[in-house]
Amino acid sequence: MNDSTKTSERPVKPKPRARSFLIALVLLVLTFWAAVRVSFDLSTFWEVWSNPIWSKFWPIPWDWVFTKENTFDPLIETLQIAVASTLLGCLVALPVSFAMSSLTTPNKVVYFISKTIMNLVRAVPDLFWAKLLVTAIGIGAFAGAWSLSIFSLAVMVKLFSETVDAADPRPLEAARSSGARHLPAVKTGVFPTVFPSYVAYSLYIFELNIRASVVLGLVGAGGVGRVIETQRQFFRFDRILGLLIIIFGIVWVIEQISVSLRKRLV
Amino acid sequence: METLSDTSIPSQRPPEPKTFHRWFIALPFLVAIIWSVVGLDITLSRLLAAPGDAWSIIRQMIPPAFGEVYERGAVGKIFESVYIAWIGTIIGAFVSLPLAFLAAHNVAPLWIRSPIRQLFNAIRAVPELILAVILIPVTGLGAWAGTLAIGIHSIGTLGKWACESIEDIDEGPMEATKACGGKWVTGMRWGVLPQVMPVISSYWLFRFEINVRASAVLGMIGAGGVGSELVSQLSFRNFPAASAVLIMTMAVVLTIDTISAAVRRRIIKGAETTDEESRTLEAITDLTGIRS
Image 1: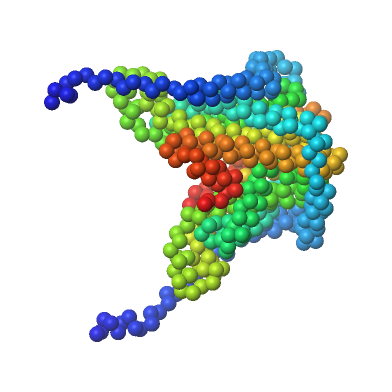
Image 2: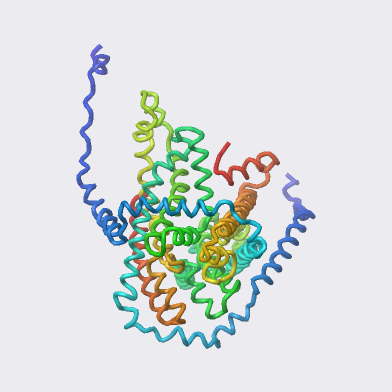
Protein backbone atom coordinates (compact mmCIF):
# COMPACT_ATOMS: atom_id res chain seq x y z
CA MET A 1 0.00 0.00 0.00
CA ASN A 2 2.66 2.51 0.96
CA ASP A 3 4.37 1.74 -2.33
CA SER A 4 1.79 3.71 -4.21
CA THR A 5 2.19 6.80 -2.05
CA LYS A 6 5.87 7.07 -2.89
CA THR A 7 6.55 9.38 -5.76
CA SER A 8 8.06 7.23 -8.42
CA GLU A 9 11.41 8.23 -9.83
CA ARG A 10 11.52 9.24 -13.43
CA PRO A 11 13.14 6.51 -15.49
CA VAL A 12 16.63 7.34 -16.69
CA LYS A 13 16.73 8.54 -20.25
CA PRO A 14 18.71 6.11 -22.36
CA LYS A 15 21.93 7.65 -23.59
CA PRO A 16 22.27 7.78 -27.36
CA ARG A 17 24.90 5.40 -28.58
CA ALA A 18 28.12 6.54 -30.21
CA ARG A 19 27.01 4.83 -33.40
CA SER A 20 23.90 7.01 -33.62
CA PHE A 21 26.07 10.13 -33.33
CA LEU A 22 28.35 8.84 -36.04
CA ILE A 23 25.44 8.12 -38.39
CA ALA A 24 23.94 11.54 -37.70
CA LEU A 25 27.28 13.21 -38.35
CA VAL A 26 27.82 11.36 -41.63
CA LEU A 27 24.29 12.22 -42.80
CA LEU A 28 24.79 15.86 -41.86
CA VAL A 29 28.08 16.10 -43.75
CA LEU A 30 26.53 14.35 -46.75
CA THR A 31 23.59 16.74 -46.66
CA PHE A 32 25.86 19.77 -46.64
CA TRP A 33 27.93 18.32 -49.45
CA ALA A 34 24.77 17.59 -51.43
CA ALA A 35 23.46 21.10 -50.78
CA VAL A 36 26.69 22.57 -52.13
CA ARG A 37 26.56 20.34 -55.18
CA VAL A 38 22.99 21.32 -56.09
CA SER A 39 23.93 24.99 -55.41
CA PHE A 40 21.35 25.33 -52.67
CA ASP A 41 20.28 28.95 -52.67
CA LEU A 42 17.30 30.18 -50.70
CA SER A 43 17.67 33.69 -52.13
CA THR A 44 15.88 32.30 -55.19
CA PHE A 45 12.71 32.64 -53.17
CA TRP A 46 12.94 36.36 -52.51
CA GLU A 47 14.66 37.21 -55.74
CA VAL A 48 12.01 35.31 -57.62
CA TRP A 49 9.48 38.14 -57.44
CA SER A 50 11.83 40.71 -58.89
CA ASN A 51 12.83 38.29 -61.64
CA PRO A 52 11.95 39.85 -65.02
CA ILE A 53 11.04 36.40 -66.37
CA TRP A 54 7.62 36.60 -64.70
CA SER A 55 6.42 39.12 -67.24
CA LYS A 56 6.82 36.34 -69.80
CA PHE A 57 4.18 34.27 -67.99
CA TRP A 58 1.48 36.90 -68.22
CA PRO A 59 -1.01 37.71 -69.75
CA ILE A 60 -2.20 34.33 -70.98
CA PRO A 61 -3.05 34.39 -74.71
CA TRP A 62 -6.35 32.53 -74.43
CA ASP A 63 -7.22 32.88 -78.11
CA TRP A 64 -3.99 30.97 -78.90
CA VAL A 65 -4.68 28.33 -76.25
CA PHE A 66 -8.30 27.66 -77.24
CA THR A 67 -7.56 26.32 -80.69
CA LYS A 68 -7.90 22.83 -82.01
CA GLU A 69 -4.37 22.36 -83.33
CA ASN A 70 -2.56 23.96 -80.38
CA THR A 71 -4.32 22.33 -77.46
CA PHE A 72 -7.14 19.95 -78.17
CA ASP A 73 -5.61 17.68 -80.81
CA PRO A 74 -2.44 17.02 -78.75
CA LEU A 75 -4.57 16.61 -75.64
CA ILE A 76 -6.68 13.96 -77.37
CA GLU A 77 -3.50 12.22 -78.44
CA THR A 78 -2.36 12.26 -74.81
CA LEU A 79 -5.61 10.63 -73.67
CA GLN A 80 -5.34 8.04 -76.43
CA ILE A 81 -1.80 7.16 -75.38
CA ALA A 82 -2.99 6.72 -71.80
CA VAL A 83 -5.94 4.50 -72.76
CA ALA A 84 -4.02 2.32 -75.22
CA SER A 85 -1.04 1.80 -72.94
CA THR A 86 -3.23 1.03 -69.94
CA LEU A 87 -5.01 -1.60 -72.04
CA LEU A 88 -1.84 -3.22 -73.34
CA GLY A 89 0.06 -3.04 -70.05
CA CYS A 90 -2.78 -4.39 -67.92
CA LEU A 91 -3.70 -7.18 -70.35
CA VAL A 92 -0.15 -8.50 -70.38
CA ALA A 93 0.09 -7.96 -66.64
CA LEU A 94 -2.73 -10.42 -65.93
CA PRO A 95 -0.90 -13.68 -66.80
CA VAL A 96 2.46 -12.29 -65.65
CA SER A 97 1.06 -11.42 -62.22
CA PHE A 98 -0.28 -14.93 -61.76
CA ALA A 99 3.13 -16.28 -62.76
CA MET A 100 4.77 -13.91 -60.29
CA SER A 101 2.70 -14.81 -57.26
CA SER A 102 3.95 -17.60 -55.06
CA LEU A 103 0.34 -18.82 -54.74
CA THR A 104 -0.37 -19.36 -58.41
CA THR A 105 3.01 -19.64 -60.11
CA PRO A 106 3.34 -22.68 -62.39
CA ASN A 107 6.91 -23.32 -61.27
CA LYS A 108 9.89 -21.75 -59.52
CA VAL A 109 11.80 -20.96 -62.71
CA VAL A 110 8.98 -18.87 -64.22
CA TYR A 111 8.55 -17.16 -60.85
CA PHE A 112 12.20 -16.27 -60.55
CA ILE A 113 12.61 -15.04 -64.12
CA SER A 114 9.47 -12.89 -64.13
CA LYS A 115 10.30 -11.32 -60.76
CA THR A 116 13.81 -10.42 -61.80
CA ILE A 117 12.81 -8.96 -65.17
CA MET A 118 10.04 -6.88 -63.64
CA ASN A 119 12.34 -5.52 -60.93
CA LEU A 120 14.85 -4.47 -63.56
CA VAL A 121 12.13 -2.84 -65.68
CA ARG A 122 10.90 -0.88 -62.68
CA ALA A 123 14.39 0.33 -61.85
CA VAL A 124 14.39 2.38 -65.09
CA PRO A 125 12.34 5.60 -64.81
CA ASP A 126 9.38 5.89 -67.21
CA LEU A 127 10.80 8.74 -69.28
CA PHE A 128 14.04 6.83 -69.82
CA TRP A 129 11.90 4.12 -71.43
CA ALA A 130 10.20 6.76 -73.53
CA LYS A 131 13.50 8.23 -74.70
CA LEU A 132 14.91 4.77 -75.47
CA LEU A 133 11.86 3.79 -77.49
CA VAL A 134 11.74 7.13 -79.30
CA THR A 135 15.29 6.43 -80.41
CA ALA A 136 14.49 2.85 -81.32
CA ILE A 137 11.15 3.14 -83.14
CA GLY A 138 10.92 6.81 -84.03
CA ILE A 139 9.50 10.04 -82.65
CA GLY A 140 5.77 10.09 -82.01
CA ALA A 141 2.84 8.84 -80.01
CA PHE A 142 3.49 5.21 -80.92
CA ALA A 143 6.80 5.16 -79.02
CA GLY A 144 5.09 6.91 -76.12
CA ALA A 145 2.33 4.31 -76.00
CA TRP A 146 4.91 1.52 -76.00
CA SER A 147 6.96 3.02 -73.21
CA LEU A 148 3.93 3.64 -71.02
CA SER A 149 2.73 0.10 -71.71
CA ILE A 150 6.02 -1.28 -70.45
CA PHE A 151 5.91 0.92 -67.40
CA SER A 152 2.28 0.17 -66.58
CA LEU A 153 3.03 -3.53 -66.97
CA ALA A 154 5.83 -3.24 -64.43
CA VAL A 155 3.77 -1.30 -61.90
CA MET A 156 0.66 -3.41 -62.44
CA VAL A 157 2.38 -6.76 -61.87
CA LYS A 158 3.92 -5.39 -58.69
CA LEU A 159 0.55 -4.28 -57.29
CA PHE A 160 -1.54 -7.14 -58.60
CA SER A 161 0.83 -10.03 -57.84
CA GLU A 162 0.81 -8.91 -54.22
CA THR A 163 -2.99 -9.03 -54.24
CA VAL A 164 -2.85 -12.54 -55.68
CA ASP A 165 -0.34 -13.47 -52.95
CA ALA A 166 -2.85 -12.39 -50.35
CA ALA A 167 -5.82 -14.17 -51.98
CA ASP A 168 -7.67 -16.90 -50.12
CA PRO A 169 -5.86 -20.19 -50.98
CA ARG A 170 -8.79 -22.46 -50.06
CA PRO A 171 -10.81 -22.24 -53.31
CA LEU A 172 -7.61 -23.03 -55.19
CA GLU A 173 -6.98 -26.01 -52.94
CA ALA A 174 -10.55 -27.18 -53.48
CA ALA A 175 -10.16 -26.94 -57.22
CA ARG A 176 -6.86 -28.81 -57.12
CA SER A 177 -8.23 -31.55 -54.89
CA SER A 178 -11.03 -32.13 -57.37
CA GLY A 179 -8.35 -32.88 -59.93
CA ALA A 180 -8.21 -29.63 -61.88
CA ARG A 181 -5.08 -28.83 -63.84
CA HIS A 182 -3.10 -25.68 -63.06
CA LEU A 183 -4.77 -23.14 -65.35
CA PRO A 184 -8.41 -24.12 -64.73
CA ALA A 185 -7.70 -24.28 -61.00
CA VAL A 186 -6.30 -20.74 -61.00
CA LYS A 187 -9.09 -19.51 -63.25
CA THR A 188 -11.91 -20.79 -61.05
CA GLY A 189 -10.17 -20.71 -57.66
CA VAL A 190 -8.31 -17.41 -57.58
CA PHE A 191 -9.36 -15.25 -60.51
CA PRO A 192 -12.92 -14.41 -59.35
CA THR A 193 -11.73 -13.24 -55.93
CA VAL A 194 -9.04 -10.92 -57.28
CA PHE A 195 -10.83 -9.62 -60.37
CA PRO A 196 -12.39 -6.54 -58.69
CA SER A 197 -8.97 -5.38 -57.49
CA TYR A 198 -7.59 -6.04 -60.95
CA VAL A 199 -10.09 -3.60 -62.43
CA ALA A 200 -9.46 -1.10 -59.65
CA TYR A 201 -5.70 -1.26 -60.16
CA SER A 202 -6.19 -0.86 -63.91
CA LEU A 203 -8.05 2.37 -63.26
CA TYR A 204 -5.28 3.48 -60.93
CA ILE A 205 -2.70 2.70 -63.62
CA PHE A 206 -4.83 4.70 -66.03
CA GLU A 207 -4.58 7.71 -63.71
CA LEU A 208 -0.81 7.30 -63.50
CA ASN A 209 -0.63 6.99 -67.29
CA ILE A 210 -2.61 10.16 -67.88
CA ARG A 211 -0.17 12.11 -65.75
CA ALA A 212 2.82 10.45 -67.36
CA SER A 213 1.51 10.94 -70.90
CA VAL A 214 1.30 14.70 -70.36
CA VAL A 215 5.07 14.87 -69.96
CA LEU A 216 5.98 12.20 -72.55
CA GLY A 217 6.09 14.83 -75.27
CA LEU A 218 9.01 16.56 -73.57
CA VAL A 219 11.23 13.74 -74.86
CA GLY A 220 9.49 13.50 -78.23
CA ALA A 221 7.06 10.71 -77.45
CA GLY A 222 3.86 12.45 -78.54
CA GLY A 223 0.95 14.09 -76.82
CA VAL A 224 0.50 17.53 -75.36
CA GLY A 225 4.05 17.66 -73.96
CA ARG A 226 5.28 18.17 -77.52
CA VAL A 227 3.53 21.55 -77.62
CA ILE A 228 4.97 22.49 -74.23
CA GLU A 229 8.48 21.59 -75.41
CA THR A 230 8.12 23.66 -78.60
CA GLN A 231 6.80 26.72 -76.77
CA ARG A 232 9.54 26.33 -74.17
CA GLN A 233 12.15 26.69 -76.86
CA PHE A 234 10.48 29.92 -78.00
CA PHE A 235 10.30 31.15 -74.36
CA ARG A 236 6.51 31.53 -74.69
CA PHE A 237 5.79 30.77 -71.06
CA ASP A 238 2.46 32.61 -71.25
CA ARG A 239 1.25 30.00 -73.73
CA ILE A 240 2.66 27.18 -71.57
CA LEU A 241 0.83 28.50 -68.51
CA GLY A 242 -2.46 28.66 -70.43
CA LEU A 243 -1.93 25.13 -71.75
CA LEU A 244 -1.11 23.80 -68.29
CA ILE A 245 -4.29 25.28 -66.81
CA ILE A 246 -6.39 23.53 -69.47
CA ILE A 247 -4.47 20.25 -69.17
CA PHE A 248 -4.71 20.00 -65.43
CA GLY A 249 -8.34 20.98 -65.44
CA ILE A 250 -9.12 18.09 -67.76
CA VAL A 251 -6.75 15.66 -66.02
CA TRP A 252 -8.39 16.54 -62.72
CA VAL A 253 -11.90 15.81 -64.04
CA ILE A 254 -10.84 12.44 -65.49
CA GLU A 255 -9.11 11.51 -62.26
CA GLN A 256 -12.17 12.31 -60.19
CA ILE A 257 -14.27 10.02 -62.41
CA SER A 258 -11.70 7.25 -62.14
CA VAL A 259 -11.36 7.65 -58.37
CA SER A 260 -15.11 7.46 -57.85
CA LEU A 261 -15.28 4.32 -60.02
CA ARG A 262 -12.49 2.75 -57.98
CA LYS A 263 -14.25 3.54 -54.72
CA ARG A 264 -17.34 1.68 -55.94
CA LEU A 265 -15.27 -1.34 -56.92
CA VAL A 266 -13.32 -1.96 -53.73
CA MET B 1 -33.40 -43.24 -43.55
CA GLU B 2 -35.46 -40.56 -45.20
CA THR B 3 -32.90 -37.93 -44.37
CA LEU B 4 -29.98 -40.04 -45.58
CA SER B 5 -31.48 -40.74 -48.96
CA ASP B 6 -31.96 -37.01 -49.39
CA THR B 7 -28.25 -36.53 -49.90
CA SER B 8 -28.13 -39.14 -52.62
CA ILE B 9 -30.47 -37.10 -54.82
CA PRO B 10 -28.26 -35.08 -57.14
CA SER B 11 -28.91 -31.48 -56.23
CA GLN B 12 -29.95 -29.12 -58.96
CA ARG B 13 -27.38 -26.62 -60.14
CA PRO B 14 -28.43 -23.07 -59.28
CA PRO B 15 -29.36 -21.06 -62.38
CA GLU B 16 -26.53 -18.98 -63.72
CA PRO B 17 -26.92 -15.26 -63.02
CA LYS B 18 -27.74 -13.13 -66.01
CA THR B 19 -24.64 -11.32 -67.20
CA PHE B 20 -26.14 -9.46 -70.13
CA HIS B 21 -26.10 -6.05 -68.42
CA ARG B 22 -22.32 -6.29 -67.96
CA TRP B 23 -21.87 -5.65 -71.64
CA PHE B 24 -23.50 -2.27 -71.24
CA ILE B 25 -20.98 -1.40 -68.52
CA ALA B 26 -18.11 -2.60 -70.69
CA LEU B 27 -19.33 -0.69 -73.73
CA PRO B 28 -17.87 2.77 -72.88
CA PHE B 29 -14.53 1.15 -72.11
CA LEU B 30 -14.56 -0.69 -75.43
CA VAL B 31 -15.43 2.49 -77.30
CA ALA B 32 -12.59 4.36 -75.55
CA ILE B 33 -10.13 1.60 -76.39
CA ILE B 34 -11.12 1.40 -80.06
CA TRP B 35 -11.04 5.20 -80.31
CA SER B 36 -7.48 5.33 -78.96
CA VAL B 37 -6.18 2.43 -81.01
CA VAL B 38 -7.58 3.96 -84.19
CA GLY B 39 -6.50 7.48 -83.22
CA LEU B 40 -2.91 6.46 -82.54
CA ASP B 41 -2.88 4.45 -85.77
CA ILE B 42 -1.79 1.31 -83.95
CA THR B 43 -1.90 -1.41 -86.58
CA LEU B 44 -0.87 -4.99 -86.09
CA SER B 45 2.07 -4.60 -88.46
CA ARG B 46 3.44 -1.60 -86.55
CA LEU B 47 2.86 -3.38 -83.28
CA LEU B 48 4.78 -6.42 -84.46
CA ALA B 49 7.57 -4.39 -86.08
CA ALA B 50 8.34 -2.45 -82.88
CA PRO B 51 10.00 -5.28 -80.92
CA GLY B 52 12.27 -5.93 -83.90
CA ASP B 53 13.37 -2.29 -84.01
CA ALA B 54 13.91 -2.30 -80.28
CA TRP B 55 15.91 -5.51 -80.54
CA SER B 56 18.26 -4.05 -83.15
CA ILE B 57 18.98 -1.17 -80.76
CA ILE B 58 19.54 -3.56 -77.87
CA ARG B 59 22.03 -5.51 -80.01
CA GLN B 60 23.99 -2.32 -80.61
CA MET B 61 23.99 -1.60 -76.89
CA ILE B 62 26.09 -4.64 -76.10
CA PRO B 63 28.76 -4.43 -74.80
CA PRO B 64 28.18 -1.28 -72.70
CA ALA B 65 31.03 1.25 -72.91
CA PHE B 66 31.60 1.84 -69.21
CA GLY B 67 35.10 3.28 -69.70
CA GLU B 68 33.92 5.97 -72.10
CA VAL B 69 31.09 7.26 -69.93
CA TYR B 70 33.29 7.11 -66.84
CA GLU B 71 35.74 9.45 -68.55
CA ARG B 72 32.87 11.78 -69.42
CA GLY B 73 32.03 12.04 -65.73
CA ALA B 74 28.79 10.05 -65.73
CA VAL B 75 29.42 8.84 -62.18
CA GLY B 76 29.41 12.43 -60.96
CA LYS B 77 26.18 13.02 -62.87
CA ILE B 78 24.52 10.04 -61.23
CA PHE B 79 25.59 11.27 -57.82
CA GLU B 80 24.28 14.70 -58.72
CA SER B 81 20.88 13.04 -59.28
CA VAL B 82 21.12 11.44 -55.84
CA TYR B 83 22.04 14.80 -54.26
CA ILE B 84 19.09 16.47 -55.99
CA ALA B 85 16.76 13.78 -54.67
CA TRP B 86 18.22 14.02 -51.16
CA ILE B 87 18.01 17.81 -50.84
CA GLY B 88 14.60 17.82 -52.56
CA THR B 89 13.30 15.26 -50.08
CA ILE B 90 14.66 17.30 -47.17
CA ILE B 91 12.96 20.46 -48.47
CA GLY B 92 9.72 18.51 -48.90
CA ALA B 93 9.97 16.94 -45.45
CA PHE B 94 10.70 20.22 -43.65
CA VAL B 95 7.89 22.13 -45.29
CA SER B 96 5.31 19.34 -45.28
CA LEU B 97 5.65 18.29 -41.61
CA PRO B 98 4.21 21.45 -40.00
CA LEU B 99 1.66 21.79 -42.80
CA ALA B 100 0.48 18.20 -42.23
CA PHE B 101 -0.38 19.04 -38.62
CA LEU B 102 -2.50 21.91 -39.87
CA ALA B 103 -4.24 19.66 -42.41
CA ALA B 104 -5.28 16.72 -40.21
CA HIS B 105 -8.97 16.76 -39.28
CA ASN B 106 -8.46 15.56 -35.71
CA VAL B 107 -6.03 18.30 -34.70
CA ALA B 108 -6.81 21.32 -36.89
CA PRO B 109 -9.95 23.41 -37.36
CA LEU B 110 -11.80 23.38 -40.66
CA TRP B 111 -10.94 26.91 -41.78
CA ILE B 112 -7.23 26.19 -41.77
CA ARG B 113 -7.15 22.57 -42.88
CA SER B 114 -9.25 22.84 -46.02
CA PRO B 115 -7.02 25.39 -47.82
CA ILE B 116 -3.92 23.39 -46.90
CA ARG B 117 -5.49 20.18 -48.18
CA GLN B 118 -6.33 21.94 -51.43
CA LEU B 119 -2.72 23.11 -51.60
CA PHE B 120 -1.47 19.51 -51.22
CA ASN B 121 -3.87 18.33 -53.92
CA ALA B 122 -2.90 21.12 -56.28
CA ILE B 123 0.82 20.41 -55.84
CA ARG B 124 0.37 16.68 -56.34
CA ALA B 125 -1.52 17.26 -59.57
CA VAL B 126 1.50 18.90 -61.27
CA PRO B 127 4.32 16.48 -62.20
CA GLU B 128 7.93 17.34 -61.29
CA LEU B 129 8.82 17.75 -64.94
CA ILE B 130 6.20 20.43 -65.49
CA LEU B 131 7.35 22.21 -62.32
CA ALA B 132 10.89 22.09 -63.67
CA VAL B 133 9.75 23.51 -67.01
CA ILE B 134 8.32 26.48 -65.14
CA LEU B 135 11.26 26.80 -62.72
CA ILE B 136 14.12 26.58 -65.22
CA PRO B 137 13.56 30.09 -66.63
CA VAL B 138 13.42 31.43 -63.08
CA THR B 139 16.48 29.71 -61.60
CA GLY B 140 18.41 28.96 -64.76
CA LEU B 141 19.44 25.55 -66.05
CA GLY B 142 21.03 23.27 -63.52
CA ALA B 143 20.61 21.19 -60.43
CA TRP B 144 18.88 23.85 -58.34
CA ALA B 145 15.86 23.93 -60.68
CA GLY B 146 15.51 20.16 -60.35
CA THR B 147 15.95 20.28 -56.58
CA LEU B 148 13.22 22.88 -56.21
CA ALA B 149 10.89 20.98 -58.53
CA ILE B 150 11.36 17.79 -56.54
CA GLY B 151 11.12 19.63 -53.25
CA ILE B 152 7.86 21.33 -54.16
CA HIS B 153 6.30 18.16 -55.56
CA SER B 154 7.36 16.21 -52.46
CA ILE B 155 5.54 18.72 -50.24
CA GLY B 156 2.28 17.57 -51.82
CA THR B 157 2.72 13.82 -51.42
CA LEU B 158 4.59 13.89 -48.12
CA GLY B 159 2.04 16.30 -46.70
CA LYS B 160 -0.83 14.06 -47.72
CA TRP B 161 0.78 10.91 -46.30
CA ALA B 162 1.82 12.62 -43.05
CA CYS B 163 -1.66 14.11 -42.68
CA GLU B 164 -3.23 10.67 -43.12
CA SER B 165 -0.97 9.10 -40.51
CA ILE B 166 -1.76 11.92 -38.06
CA GLU B 167 -5.45 11.20 -38.60
CA ASP B 168 -4.87 7.53 -37.71
CA ILE B 169 -3.37 8.15 -34.25
CA ASP B 170 -4.58 7.02 -30.87
CA GLU B 171 -5.97 10.24 -29.39
CA GLY B 172 -5.35 9.24 -25.76
CA PRO B 173 -1.90 10.85 -25.35
CA MET B 174 -3.16 14.07 -26.90
CA GLU B 175 -6.06 14.14 -24.44
CA ALA B 176 -3.65 13.45 -21.58
CA THR B 177 -1.49 16.47 -22.43
CA LYS B 178 -4.63 18.56 -22.66
CA ALA B 179 -5.77 17.27 -19.24
CA CYS B 180 -2.40 18.33 -17.79
CA GLY B 181 -2.98 21.83 -19.09
CA GLY B 182 -0.82 21.60 -22.17
CA LYS B 183 -1.34 23.96 -25.05
CA TRP B 184 -2.05 22.90 -28.65
CA VAL B 185 1.66 22.86 -29.53
CA THR B 186 2.50 20.77 -26.46
CA GLY B 187 -0.19 18.29 -27.41
CA MET B 188 1.28 18.00 -30.88
CA ARG B 189 4.83 17.65 -29.62
CA TRP B 190 4.19 15.05 -26.89
CA GLY B 191 0.84 13.55 -27.85
CA VAL B 192 1.05 13.22 -31.63
CA LEU B 193 4.62 13.51 -32.86
CA PRO B 194 6.06 10.47 -31.00
CA GLN B 195 3.27 8.31 -32.44
CA VAL B 196 3.58 9.39 -36.05
CA MET B 197 7.31 10.02 -36.37
CA PRO B 198 8.30 6.41 -37.23
CA VAL B 199 5.69 6.19 -39.98
CA ILE B 200 6.38 9.67 -41.32
CA SER B 201 10.14 9.20 -41.42
CA SER B 202 9.71 5.95 -43.32
CA TYR B 203 7.51 7.87 -45.76
CA TRP B 204 10.34 10.35 -46.18
CA LEU B 205 12.68 7.53 -47.09
CA PHE B 206 10.15 6.05 -49.47
CA ARG B 207 9.73 9.43 -51.12
CA PHE B 208 13.52 9.64 -51.42
CA GLU B 209 13.49 6.39 -53.40
CA ILE B 210 10.87 7.83 -55.75
CA ASN B 211 12.77 11.11 -55.99
CA VAL B 212 15.96 9.39 -57.11
CA ARG B 213 14.10 8.11 -60.16
CA ALA B 214 12.41 11.47 -60.69
CA SER B 215 15.66 13.43 -60.52
CA ALA B 216 17.26 11.08 -63.04
CA VAL B 217 14.41 11.97 -65.40
CA LEU B 218 14.67 15.71 -64.67
CA GLY B 219 18.10 15.81 -66.26
CA MET B 220 16.47 15.10 -69.59
CA ILE B 221 15.14 18.67 -69.77
CA GLY B 222 18.28 20.20 -68.29
CA ALA B 223 17.47 20.31 -64.59
CA GLY B 224 20.66 18.56 -63.49
CA GLY B 225 21.60 14.94 -63.08
CA VAL B 226 22.12 11.84 -65.16
CA GLY B 227 19.22 12.33 -67.58
CA SER B 228 21.13 14.81 -69.72
CA GLU B 229 23.89 12.25 -70.16
CA LEU B 230 21.45 9.62 -71.44
CA VAL B 231 19.78 12.10 -73.78
CA SER B 232 23.05 13.25 -75.33
CA GLN B 233 24.34 9.69 -75.80
CA LEU B 234 21.08 8.61 -77.40
CA SER B 235 20.90 11.61 -79.70
CA PHE B 236 24.43 10.86 -80.94
CA ARG B 237 23.19 7.27 -81.33
CA ASN B 238 26.13 6.16 -79.22
CA PHE B 239 24.30 3.10 -77.94
CA PRO B 240 27.10 1.36 -76.01
CA ALA B 241 27.59 4.53 -73.95
CA ALA B 242 23.82 4.96 -73.48
CA SER B 243 23.47 1.42 -72.18
CA ALA B 244 26.39 1.99 -69.79
CA VAL B 245 24.63 5.09 -68.41
CA LEU B 246 21.40 3.12 -68.14
CA ILE B 247 23.00 0.20 -66.32
CA MET B 248 24.83 2.49 -63.90
CA THR B 249 21.60 4.35 -63.16
CA MET B 250 19.75 1.09 -62.55
CA ALA B 251 22.50 -0.09 -60.23
CA VAL B 252 22.35 3.10 -58.16
CA VAL B 253 18.53 3.09 -58.09
CA LEU B 254 18.39 -0.55 -56.96
CA THR B 255 21.11 -0.03 -54.34
CA ILE B 256 19.32 2.97 -52.85
CA ASP B 257 15.98 1.12 -52.92
CA THR B 258 17.51 -1.83 -51.07
CA ILE B 259 19.25 0.25 -48.40
CA SER B 260 16.24 2.49 -47.92
CA ALA B 261 13.83 -0.45 -47.67
CA ALA B 262 16.07 -2.05 -45.03
CA VAL B 263 16.16 1.17 -43.00
CA ARG B 264 12.41 1.61 -43.34
CA ARG B 265 11.82 -1.91 -42.07
CA ARG B 266 14.14 -1.25 -39.15
CA ILE B 267 12.19 1.94 -38.30
CA ILE B 268 8.76 0.32 -38.50
CA LYS B 269 9.45 -3.14 -37.10
CA GLY B 270 12.23 -2.31 -34.66
CA ALA B 271 15.45 -4.13 -33.92
CA GLU B 272 14.09 -7.54 -32.93
CA THR B 273 13.85 -8.91 -36.45
CA THR B 274 17.17 -7.59 -37.61
CA ASP B 275 19.81 -10.09 -36.69
CA GLU B 276 22.57 -10.43 -39.24
CA GLU B 277 21.16 -13.37 -41.17
CA SER B 278 17.57 -12.18 -41.55
CA ARG B 279 18.83 -8.73 -42.55
CA THR B 280 20.73 -10.24 -45.45
CA LEU B 281 17.76 -12.39 -46.41
CA GLU B 282 15.40 -9.45 -46.38
CA ALA B 283 17.81 -7.36 -48.43
CA ILE B 284 17.80 -10.14 -51.03
CA THR B 285 14.00 -10.16 -50.86
CA ASP B 286 13.92 -6.44 -51.59
CA LEU B 287 16.28 -6.75 -54.49
CA THR B 288 14.74 -9.75 -56.20
CA GLY B 289 11.24 -9.78 -54.77
CA ILE B 290 11.73 -13.42 -53.85
CA ARG B 291 10.70 -14.55 -50.40
CA SER B 292 12.58 -17.49 -49.03
